Image (cartoon, rainbow, N blue to C red; front, side, top):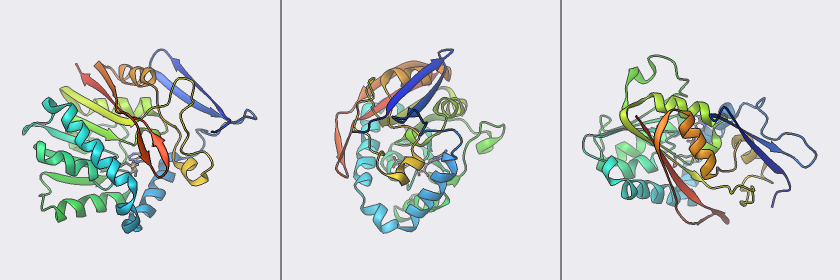
Length: 256
Ligand SMILES: C[S@@+](CC[C@H](N)C(=O)[O-])C[C@H]1O[C@@H](n2cnc3c(N)ncnc32)[C@H](O)[C@@H]1O
């Protein structure tokens, strides 16, 4: 168990900063570190080790989470639904979703992951019109993704990688069509910060993970703060990956 304490606070009910404080009062999750760049490099490297990544236990979890989304929110996955899978990785989740929707667009900061995603779609003989990824990091500027809006945005196991989750959520909310929903899957950290911390003691993982999970209250604040309504939250029990316990959740918000 890590000896650091976590101090999360909310400003104006909208913007959550999470500071990871070391026992000597220093900050680990400093905003000076470029997490986006570190993630891009890390996941490009992971893509090069494709064999390892494909065999990793995370793949099984991603599959299960993709299936869980479709089972939990059946009504959101229809033949008319266009989906954005943000931080899509190598497309494991998209591949579970695509049989149930009209089309799915993957977006990821890592070109290596995007290439794996598109190779997976090709292997599965799914046309690019139905499943295709592009490399970008959304900034919330006009004309991104050709101005497209989506009925559904999913983002799985990636929030803990984002520097500013409130900002990212506002951007994801902005690409939702009216009435569209955002589904975020990540893992739980309890209010006391007592969750087993996967990243401490691993310097490489610390560089790409500014957060060690989220509480339900934090997720509510983040989705409310992005102007999304109809907050819903489900914990999905406990999973064991690479010798660690993780407690996945799905949080939902809808553009009203
Ligand atoms: C743990 S993987 C999850 C992949 C996939 N969503 C899944 O559940 O299998 C995290 C992904 O987030 C991407 N990522 C990290 N930071 C990002 C950012 N700022 N913008 C877009 N993608 C990002 C990484 O490149 C990586 O593919």
